[in-house]
Length: 509
Image (cartoon, rainbow, N blue to C red):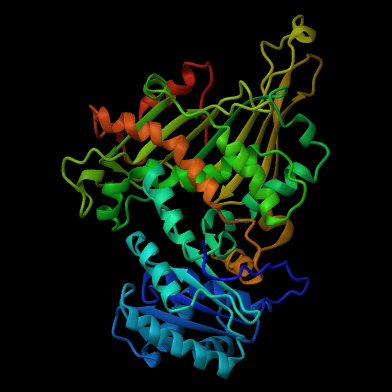
């Protein structure tokens, strides 16, 4: 059990965050300069960040506070769009640095001294959140050291929270063990398992779209929906992460976190409120309802691929996965997967969930497509119409954020003909846009104590439960034909065959 008294937090009605310190473990890394610092700047520039705020960076690099402040300034000038020099200067003056290894107890003593000084100078009230922008092997150790140094203790009305980046484990057993180790020090209410996909407006809007519109919720079930398709396609390769990726692969890297979050928000039952645990209770239920595949089902309903050489749309040559730096020249690691999943509950019985994700695909695009059942043809049998097209509702997540609806309408003229009509809504067009990294809402929610968009322990384990059977079969049966798709295409032909066997096809992007 955790060593501190749990502090109950309610979402405040004020706009700004409460006073606090953001402690970044791995503060000299790429994530900090490209995403975290610009996100904090964006919260500051929009008036959402408390002025009683500071950043303390911690890393093994032998920097000083002055060097870290220069890093903060340089990063914001490069990655924060149109950065206001006064605000950059403000964040620079509110930044500090502690050098140390993440497993070194002395480093945490220095961190504790620095935080006490920051509290006195900036009035941060002893409220700290620790962002783990570090390698997964340091997660449990870092939490343990926070406990040993009393930095995880919530006392005298202060709060302490920890944001943990993915991957959260590499299979079900390791995820359970990591949860166990972390919860020996922290309460679940202090743990914020982050997934940057949940920072995207369209993903957050799924709940509002589904439950705030009487038009769609009544038809959101097996009675009207034929199937669901989820595509998360990337045009990039492993981007210098070959060493990590070759031990992970696409299934581990994408499905238990990103894609399971998309599935749960799309298929969950209505929560009794938008309180964090009410929402996450329903997400957990539907993730637990995903039926784990048998060995035979994995062979028929799971496809893996690895990209070979190819060309971009501009004709530029792209190397194959096995030619990427730090990748085994005979690697059997998958860079593409396609799965057919089933949800065993009343709402979704018999409705397949198809998903695909991969590297070096033809286009960068993430979407959730709801394919509705076709209307009965009987009324149109004596017309020139040969078949009625199905209706589609598409939630575009990235790079464009919006919602599109496809339906049929009569083509003008004396004959009865049906033509497809596409209605689309784009966030940028309707609501305008501000510079966002995708992390702003997640950092803000952590600071106000709203865990709705963060994974809970049972959700993480439920995601791995669906993935583990596939990992087991693929480990026992190595792929025979890798690479099996060209870079710059939509994946291996087996992915098309997966849906063709059911008389369906992937949406043409």
